[in-house]
Image (cartoon, rainbow, N blue to C red):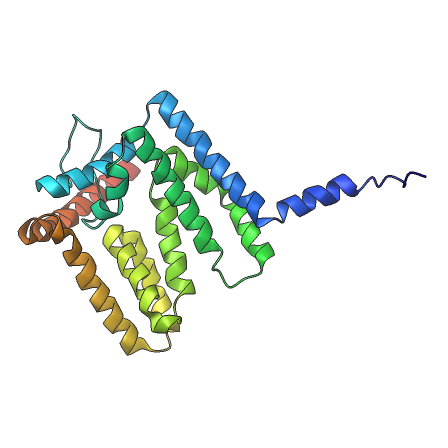
Length: 244
């Protein structure tokens, strides 16, 4: 005899699917690919073109923060070390570089979420809730997903390896995009604070000087001053825009 059907079986299977980490990752990857294809079709690559041009500017010792209308609209507002993060993607054709750039941001954030000290169910809930933010990041080829991953890893690695990697993620976040400074709030939870400060200083030296290997010390040093001016101008513009 045939076994009786179970009307709740489809719901059970669907529930198991939603609770599968691989399904959540597949969903994130699908979102990423959809908006990469959309960017290919619409030729809307401006943010990515800004990013990949920073490595070219590093090599040619041209301002990171000037306007380059021949390559893209608007200007870069990321720190000099960012040019090295984007370097592997800049070496590829733009259409392929964009694909791997968005995939990098997507997977990096997903992997960072998996390190959160909460239950697997809570991590999955976070993944689903974060999808609208992921869509915005992928749509505009933004670094926000990776910036979020740096903040998460700064926290989750806080007291592992004596804070060595946590300090790296925190300092890198600050040197790339000042939003990473929020990670400094985690300092109060550090067990070995003197060692953490030492590691932070060491990483600051590394990230400050690393671009000099591809350019010149004078250019990179001047670029940090230019970055400060760029951020000050951008902030002033945002304030005026919000008032108007």
